[in-house]
Image 1 (cartoon, rainbow, N blue to C red):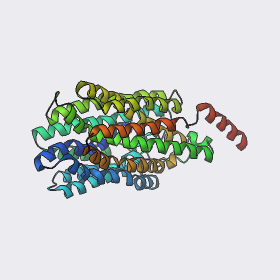
Image 2 (tube, rainbow, N blue to C red):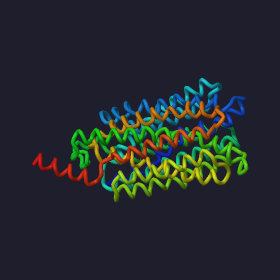
Image 3 (spheres, rainbow, N blue to C red):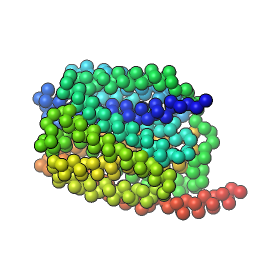
Image 4 (spheres, helix red, strand yellow):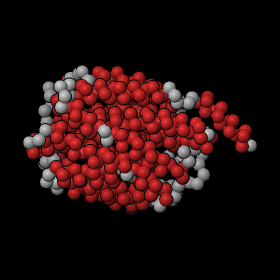
Length: 398
């Protein structure tokens, strides 16, 4: 009997993970109005959550590989739900900061554990990661629209209460419907068995450079987008819900880039795809630095196509080159680097937003980082190079 509910709940977990992390960046506009404090002062309260989002990825991956991925993912659903709910009762900035940090710690579980479970079977890995990435991006969209709706109709506290209950309810259904798939496979068909140490170091060095730069870009764009739209799309809408709808529309439509890239991963070499993603990101980030109104909305959509499209490429590298029994730990290392560096986005946005250029300066810095992703792609091994190395190693071990 197949474990038919496993993948749907892994996808749902990805949605809830990103939804939880993006509630505050949308709600902060309303909190600022209620407390009479500026955006640049309140946004740094989220710094702890993004540091924890990266720092706790390694212990989560280690625990999952050594104990149980299924049980650790169960902790994710209930833990992040309870943390969201409790944060809704915060009475001051320090309480919000503490609550957000706990949210980040539980949110850190998903990527090293959920993605490792998802790619346990390498067949059609690209499209599987693509659809999972789409669900994660829908979490970004739902965070914007749900938080906007709650803020306008009930208040910002409800924006934490409602998703908190949804996460805990999902945990109950996960235990009821999903069977424990068991421990990681000791033997894997991963291509990682056919590369030597030198090539492995080269691949992961490139991956870490690309994902570190990409992590800052992803975090910066998703954190700043509600406030960017609040400032630059005032002619289109002036309510939290309206801003949430526009952000959600951009995230939802751009999210399908992950499905497309996922299909391409199964057909083309990743080096070409990485170069193509860079060619989209750099000019769109530059344009976003200088546009307003409908033009800004269009540039934001094209920009997020490139930002979201990079995500399945990064996960596919680990899925293809690392044996299943080690994947959760390696994903943990990847995400602690990516998300740890990405935590830099919060103080960077806060500092640059206070400058004369505001968000224009933010996008210019991100365009420079996108250049780093683009350049690193040229050093990624080609498919022919990997095929020759595989043949050479097979001869040596015959």
